[in-house]
Every structure is written in structure tokens, then in C-alpha cells.
Length: 287
Image (cartoon, rainbow, N blue to C red; front, side, top):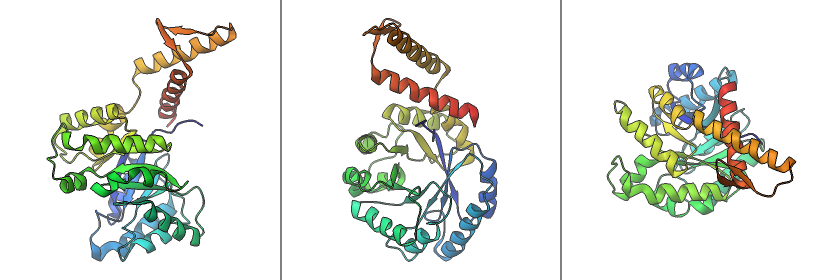
């Protein structure tokens, strides 16, 4: 199956109608329409209705739509889940998930609401307990599709400084990447809070790419281009991937058991990664 890139994952406040409309013109791969952190308690119900109306109206083109609902144990969580069970969104994003039991509870609500099997779940890992239990969360159910890092809350709870190196969070970041990969899920890095720190954003994206993340969550449209560039294959990567696949196919036609590209041994695992790079590049070009 072709790999769909999710390089830029932009949070949009569900209570802001202008933001919901503006999102239709933004070059983000994914839009998380937010009912949780970005919405005041007295606006929760209004935001839910507004976001659902926007989703039903459509017009978001190639952008994947995800709705971040309120926590299951809040007065709004269950109603949020039920409201979007029958809508054409990619996933529900669940905040502060700490156990597989929480995923199962949401699945039961979706089942009762007659949700399509295509509706997936994204779980946010943003507490110490959530990090320690991320493996069971990732494996909880077939609806699971992604792990999303909530690094602001995580840094606070871990009592580590939110430094450029993110040294105090490296264990948590890598643990989530490993858990996601073990279950075939995508995994997205946390946000960069300083909107005036372009160099810092570039560095954070590069670090996230090196750690294995598929993309970065964002808090402002001005961050989209940087994330898209950082998590897109470079022209050199694309050229090398094409050489690997061409070399592999030629060797197979000639009945050779060993394939060398630029003097390096190529195995099936390299071919799979090369194909993933080409799929991403082609999808970006066609978007």
C-alpha cells in the first residue's frame, strides 16, 4: 500500500470559525481540529457543533482531518466521540492516554454509535504514565493508527527543561517511536512553541527526523513549510532510492543473488525503504 506522508500536523482551534475556514487553504498534510486545549470550558459545546459543521461541509481537499476530542473522563469527552463517529474524518485524537483500557472504552462508544471501521484513533503520549504504558496503548486495538507526543505537558510532568537538545525527553521520544513501529503505526513529534525561533524549529524537525518521527505537530501555519521540507525526501534521497530499485530489479532479471549499488550490498529491507521514499515523493508531487 502506498505510504501517505503526514509531515505537517497542524492544530487548529475548534472554537475559531475563521481558523477553520483558513485551514482549507493551508499546505498542511493533516489538520487536527481541536476541541480540547484550545477551547475554553464555556465554549466546548459550541466548538463541537462548529467543527462538525465544518467537517460535514467539506472543502479541505487533500488534507487529512483529525478531531482532538476532550478526555473521556471530562463532561464533554463521550459526546465528542459520539458526535464524530459518523463523519468523514481520518481519526479521533485522544488526549493524555495512559492505558489500553482507555482505548477500549472509546472503541465501545464508537461501536455503539455505529462508527465505520475506517475511523482510526490517535493516542497522545504526554504524561509519564502514558510514556511507560505506550506499548500497550499502541497495541490496544486495530483502530489505533498513530502516537502523538505532547511534549509541553510531558516536560512539565517530568520536571525537565524544554531545551533545544530535549535531553530530558529523549528516552520518552524514542520509546514512543519504538512502540509505534512495533505496531505499524505513525508517530508524530511534539510542538515547537517559539514562533519567532525559525532556526530552533528547523533544528527540532531535524532532530525529530533523526529520532524516527514521521512528522511534526505544529501550532501555527507559519511552521508548515519548515516541517514539510524537513520531513520530505531530498532529491539526493530520491535519486538513490531509484538506483536501489533499478539495481534490484536488474539483478533479479539476470538471476543474480547479490545486488550492489554504489559498492554497497542491497537487501530486501533497503528496497522496502527505497520504495517508501519514492511513494512519499510521488504523493507530495501529486498533491
